[in-house]
Amino acid sequence: MTASEESSTTPPSAISGPKVTYVVISLLVILGGLVSYTLASYNTIDASRANAATAWQELAEELSSHYRRVEVDVATRVDAREVGMEDGEQFQLALDAFRGTSILEKQFAAAARVQKTLEKMNLEPEKSSSLQQKLSDYNSEAAATRELIQSTAGQILSVFLNFPQYA
Image (cartoon, rainbow, N blue to C red; front, side):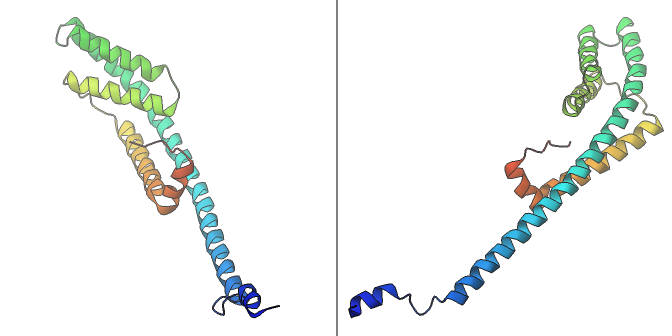
């Protein structure tokens, strides 16, 4: 073996087996910790999403009975020509969309349309205390879920998963 062959096969003195092993093991431990944190956070986010969905279902039941009362009021006002027929129809369409689905996102969007239609008609019916409580419960659960989704682990999971937005 000549001197040039010997120098090309020996690694530089700065890179040694123990140093490389230490760097590789450190990177694996950091990566393992990050994956564990992210997966544990997924369980927390999933539980929070389930709590928000349960709170929405309870709120939707209360909204349904509230909307029954509002529907009578809107019909009375349309008959008395206090509210335009088109607005009454828009309200009824939004209400039918709310009643016609049990999918959380679609039901939420329909409830938002109902509320927007009521605001357009300048109607703000009195909300019962139980409706206000259910609304408050849902808002706190949705806020907790949004906060978890905005966390570092939630942002990492968002790359791979599509979390619904909680309004």
